[in-house]
Structures are given as structure tokens and as C-alpha cells.
Picture 1 (cartoon, one colour):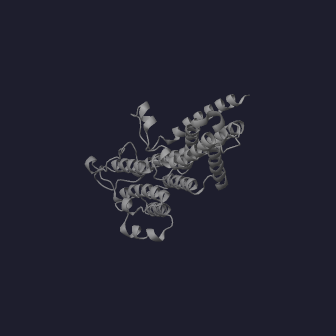
Picture 2 (picture 1 turned 90 degrees about the horizontal axis):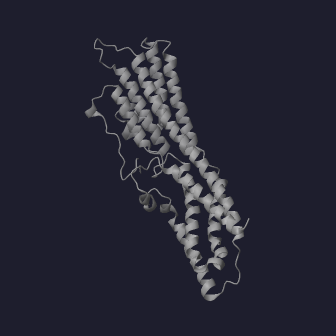
Picture 3 (picture 1 turned 60 degrees about the vertical axis):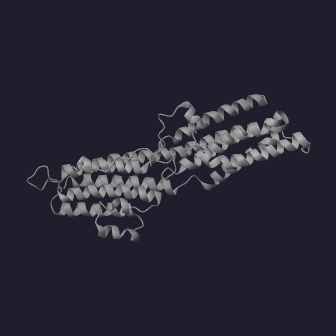
Length: 340
């Protein structure tokens, strides 16, 4: 296999992994109406926002190397392209594998929040079916039933804030008693505290005879599913790809891009900075994409739209309580093509 063949293989590998990795960043950014040219010129949500300083440094270095070699002849040595071809191929495969692992975390987070949507709706349906109306008016919603649904909404909002490290109080104030919210500063895990008190509330209703003994295990199973979803989300947030793995890939990418002009300048001369800029854009971009999707619960452009999902659950559950349409909060819409 000639060096030219190897370079062609590298280009195909990098292009394939770049397509796969960029596909991982399509959930939060809404771009269905974007044209082919629009994708080429997109800046927000692309890795160029984070990688351009690195690309600039490498390109400036490549320019200096090229000028020294072509104008002054100070560079009396030059590496061949072959080691860069071999390392580049391995590096592209390594980056693709790491990005796949990062995307698996991203997609698992999305599936967990999809499960949260389903469990919230199922629990609300159980509350409506298993609790007696307690009123001569068949359309009346008992206060206890409303309280349980409100607590479910509060749990969803507080879970989002837990994963993002923000204060849940503004979003749950309308759904929980003031005395419970006042205890938030003393609670390390607000969603768990909310779900624990929901379980105690179900027990008291069962003891009062308002829940049939055959229905209580089904309601408890729903609470268990809520807890399982929360635990899985916390696992993704707290367990990163091993540090040594990320250190190695960052170092190899940086050293490869910095050393690249030493192997290209003899063959392509003044085109070296341009080629180095293009290759470094590909490798630094793939490296950055892996970093960004590794933590799917953040607030960057390519992270999961947890606020939008939380609002959707809130609206669905309030509708089941019979809240008039004009009193429902609006569903969130994309702002500049991005969902929060």
C-alpha cells in the first residue's frame, strides 16, 4: 500500500466519522429547514466555536514552518508523510470509537427522559383511575389526586435542575407546599425527597382506605420507575469517560496537528498551512464533539432540551387534571433554531 493510498483511506475514515459524529448534535438544535449551503455556513452549534483558537495556533505554526523552509531554507530536515498517514488512520478510528461511546451516553440520556415522559403519564392515569372521585359531581377532581399530579410535575422539574446544578425553587413553587420548599436547602437530593414524601402520602391514603390494597403496589411500582430513571441519569452525570482516555486523545490530536507541517512542507510547499488548517479542523472538531455530547444534561446548544421536555410533561399532566387551555403554560418553541 503506497502513502497515497493510505492518505486516501485516512480521508475517507475522517469523513465517515465526521458525518457520524455531527449526526449526534441534531436533537437540541432544530434545523429541518436548513439548506445544504446553510449547513456549510452554520456557526452556532458547530464545533468551530470551541476549536477555532486551536486551529489558529496550529495554522500559524504551520505558516512559520513553511516560511522558514521555503524562504530561508533554515529547515535542513523534513519528516516523510508515511508516519502521519499511519498515525492519522489510527487516530481517526480512535476518535470515532470515543465519539461512539460519548453518543451512547447522549442517547441513553434521551431514552431515559423519554421513559420519564411515559411513566409520568402512566402514574397520572393510575391516580385518576385508582382514586375515588369523593364527590357527587363526577367531573370534580379530589384535592389529593391533584396534589399527587402536582408532585409528579415538581419531581420532573427538580430532576432537571439536579442534573444541571441549578435551583428548582422557581419551577416547583406552584406545585409544592411552601413548608416543603423551605426544606430544599437542607436536602442534598430534592427529587428524591419529593418522591419519598409522595410515597408517604400514598401510604396514608391506603391506611385511610382511599386506595385499594391491590392498587397500592401498582402505584408504588410507578414510584420505583421514577427512582430508577433518576438514578440512571445521575449515573450518566457523575460517571465520565475515564480521565486518562480523554487526556491521551487530546494529547495525540494536539501533537499530530502541530507536527503535521513538518511532514507536508517538503511535498506541498506553500499549501502546507491550508492543508494543516483543514486537517486540524477535522481532528479538533471530532475531539470537541466527543467532549460536548459526553455530558448530555448540560445547557450547551447540542445538549438535551430538558426544559422543553419538562414543560411538555407539565402541560400533559395539567391537561389530565382538567386545567383550561388558556391557563396552561405554553409549550416551548425553538429560539434561533435551538430548544432549551
